[in-house]
Image (cartoon, rainbow, N blue to C red; front, side, top):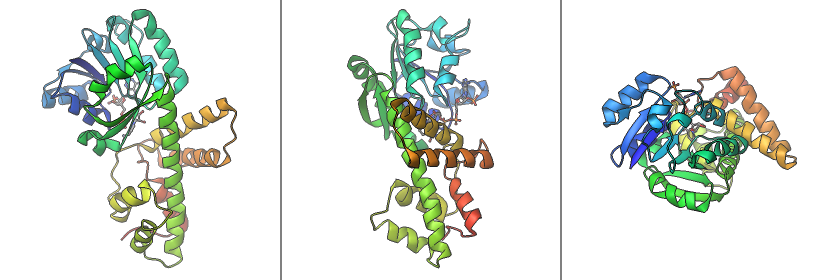
Length: 295
Ligand code: NDP
């Protein structure tokens, strides 16, 4: 299939790399050198603009920080709308927001382009291994069309419901991820301060009922080891928490715990900066307590 992939960031790159051996791939990235490097490594075509990427593509995939970024690629002489052809399938793997997703779909409808939100979970390693979870919002027929494409990088591909429900699912998932990170920072530093060895605390937690993906996988691999790799920016996690809170407000649901977590992630983003990794709020807990989760 002729597929265009736009957005070769931390997660977009390994997703596109999974498509390259299976399809005729065209790539576009805002910073052109990154697309050039990817194209030469994976034998893909580098497009000169979003319009050039979309021209002739049967499927267009975007993976940008926000839905607003995707919307910004639509217009202008070099925009996607100028290149998209009737019948094209457009999948947005951005962790976006439902309102903007529906707006994008409205812009695409007159062109006869099928659109679905298809955000992913599973991290950069999951993308490279092809084991991502993909949360799809859109018509059932569009979901069926998307399945074979998404299976290049997705293992569990779930139809969540109508347009925007993939975004909603992803936003709640990542809010809960953020809650776990913040809670583990506070809980584990307290245990260390109380005299428990960090490794023993983590191992005991992981054999008990307070465990989570963060405690079982991320803390042992990245925090106890002191590796702290940069794979997913805290700024993007905080953006996801904001989308979740907006959704709760629109639904008229009070969520005092999640509001507080969102505020703490916002504060952490301000302190740690745009390049910080999503686990780094744990560093703030370490700094505040004077206890290190290492061992
Ligand atoms: P990065 O910040 O690593 O990369 C962002 C990508 O988007 C880059 O290719 C960047 O181009 C491009 N970009 C940014 N702004 C614009 C714009 N205004 N117009 C065009 N291109 C733009 O993000 P990730 O790859 O980590 O994340 C992408 C999406 O996937 C986000 O929604 C994120 O929440 C989600 N996600 C990320 C995961 C991860 O583990 N990293 C896991 C699951 C979901 P340039 O190279 O020029 O900067």
